[in-house]
Length: 301
Image (cartoon, rainbow, N blue to C red; front, side, top):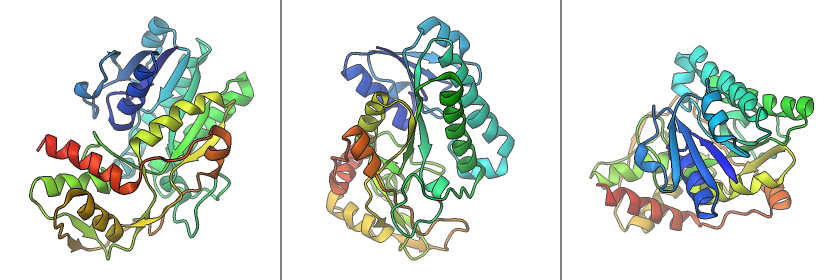
């Protein structure tokens, strides 16, 4: 099939593009390269440099059947400092992609977020959990989900939104507000001590990017809806560091900094619906995924 991956030069998007190439699809990547990298685009995919807020020319040239919408303004701090910019990219950009896809009858799979939408979770959050975004970023992602649902009701489309857990793996950017896995392993590869903010008891649901890519492709079988893509397991930062020691064979000795205002204490998602609807479950154990990520960073040290 003909597919467009927005943000396909980025972390998750490049893995989705690679999985599509591997199964024999015609793959096009739409990316403005503001954070993505040319070298992330898999061989066999065609890169189109452009903005998701004005995607019509690329969509008209490609005439996609599938659209995997992963391009976004993904920084929480930027969303707080520049909420208008965040909404422009994540809300207006998503509506623009919706309309461009509708012109060609293409189905969209949209990358959303669990932690930024659910807030703190005392137990694994299901899709019906109360939605409590704490940042403009989480709010803009939730707005994107609602636009997909509205288009499904209004136009009879089959768009699907996936709420990812804390995705980690090769090609993740270790700078800025990147995931803790990339930040820590890059620091260790560079001979620096990673910093734990707070006491390290904060818990997250770490899901490997290859598993996320599989779920994202599988979601095209659905006729719409919202699903969590996660492991359902909560791992503390301290437990994560212990797993990193085993995966890397390094004596990682993190330092502690002050707790950061606004950090969630516990974020874990219930992936039961994805299991039932897609037959999907995470296959890569945390330590194995950390080892693959470590090999990626050490190869570029």
